Length: 120
Length: 107
Image (cartoon, rainbow over all chains, first blue to last red; front, top):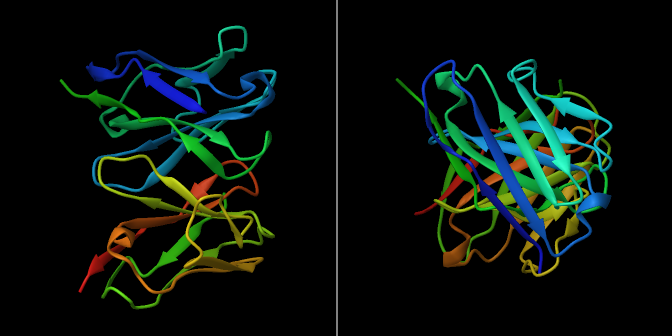
């Protein structure tokens, strides 16, 4: 059974940093592009970042480029999102998401999400 | 970036009704379009991928159509568990983008 379990969320002050993790199981993690998607309170879905299976290529939404860094440890089946210079508008539930196919495709599995609150 | 315009933003319907939600891409995305259902406090659930392919385990009353820039999600014979929010998603190119969502409410 595929499982994605996010952790690392919490309350942080504006300008602060946080590192999210997503522990994956039930599939060959090292063969899949992985993604982060967020959802602000009462808002829609907002794609944040993606990383290729090897970790060699990364992609970011303009809103987080230069502040967030996606990475992965295939030996530990774990995806990360390092978030720096956090802003109030980064407040959201952050989901890791696995594509249906190993590459670029719809997301067939999502984690339960971890809440990040940026506030003083 | 590819903009996804979803409509309507909300719709009211009754059990047994048929509902259609549309999504328009600002440029062609072939069939790289997915639909998700989301209930409060839960992660989205994949319903349709490749514009018209039904995800395993999803009831056949859900169907998708379209290609290029115009896409449709149709829910036939609405059931009580279908009242939720629906999102479209283009997976043609990064940055991926989602529609604004359609809230399906009970009339």
